[in-house]
Length: 152
Picture 1 (cartoon, helix red, strand yellow):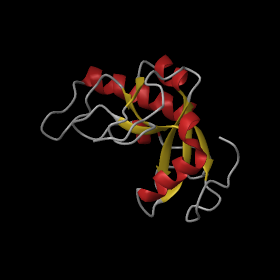
Picture 2 (picture 1 turned 180 degrees about the vertical axis):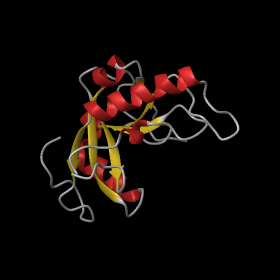
Picture 3 (picture 1 turned 180 degrees about the horizontal axis):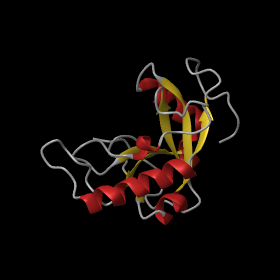
């Protein structure tokens, strides 16, 4: 059973949505994320994110660090930006309070079930748009506790 969560379920358009960024998911100049961080794993249509306005930068970083030693920073979007590209963001507190998912409306391909060319193009466009819109914040101390970088 998930503990009580006092965060409202609807996600406001101005809410900051954060995705932890791992090594290899940043461009060579370390200034932007690779769009693939917004692509669902095969067979799914959900990308895990955190509701920053309710959890804060320290929580976002600590959660990213808990995902593995390859954590390098945070990518930030507004919910309205996600929705403007035709994707959605919704509360998913079954994992933890403040957890959300980005969904594109297209289940990512698996080796046994490839996407149609049209669906693949639609998904690629959404993912590319989110990558271009995301603000990337490299973590100045990825192994340290809490967020010490600029305000998200």
